[in-house]
Length: 434
Image 1 (tube, rainbow, N blue to C red):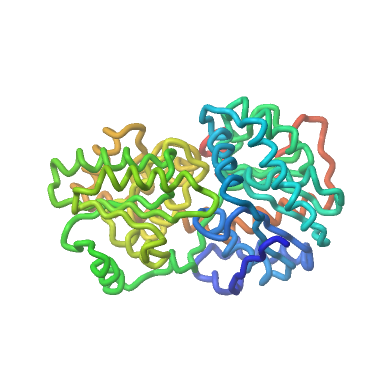
Image 2 (cartoon, rainbow, N blue to C red):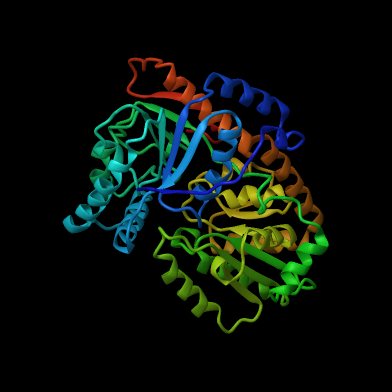
């Protein structure tokens, strides 16, 4: 049996006054067309990453809209998740190959999980590479199968891509954050371009009273009287936590009391995180102004909320990024962001909105110093960032885009003569190019 994830309740009405009304009205209309549809979301972990955070909010909202939605996670051991992490990195362009034994372990895990998908679903949405091979091993072809790829696969490692490619042809549609992320020789003809979104009603994103937020940070040892910059991300080489430390130290030469917080959630499907964590701890152990926290030492969503709300600047110095939900999370709180100019981050932070995009450690340091020394400008950037998130990156918009894709698949609209059809495309795509 696959593990079923427990979820709470949501209602469309709870987003009134938060998300744009026109999005909510359209969402209600499309949901009526699909009422009663059976939808399964399938991924590898119930906690510790952006996918699980999205599903924890989107699946309850689907249910509230009258759809029969479930969220299940595949089963796998440590060896399997070691392999899928390498697969994940390879799809983002990291060098290396999988041995024949590792390929057999990956496919064997898919074969073990596949028989448990015999329930009668109308749509199965498979997230990222961990369960990606399953549709090709399922003998009943009743549901429409959709692969939702959350990472930047624009330039995958050829050895890794050649291995996974044959197993993707069984999908009826695929979803990417940007059109530029579609990998070469992609075999799925129906593609939707749908950026992720945050839930403004989650504990991480609800408005916290300032006194409570200050108390939370002081309780765990952060000095509220000192300036603070924070990065919230998995301990992953693509998030460049050691580069963040290097940029911070350049700034601290000019602002001696500056604090840095590095917050991470350790996920079951990310075994490399512990190696990166140990490197970060070794690099920062002697610096009492650098705070390193994980979800395993008492720092959860509310604490993350407090950090993002009270930090002078939030950092997201990614080297490769699918979207970067934490950017929208910080902007939703009006906090300016310094972030890598990669993946879906520029979509969230167009010029003059949200913060400053950077391409190196030195640029990151310069941007941090500028915003710390110009708080009025920083505040204005954060305020414009919050409104952009309200318009484009809240949960109802994401669920609306996904339901538009399901509606197109349910109506069996034929694919034209072109090699690929973009079934649903966010208006934001034109802003960042293809």
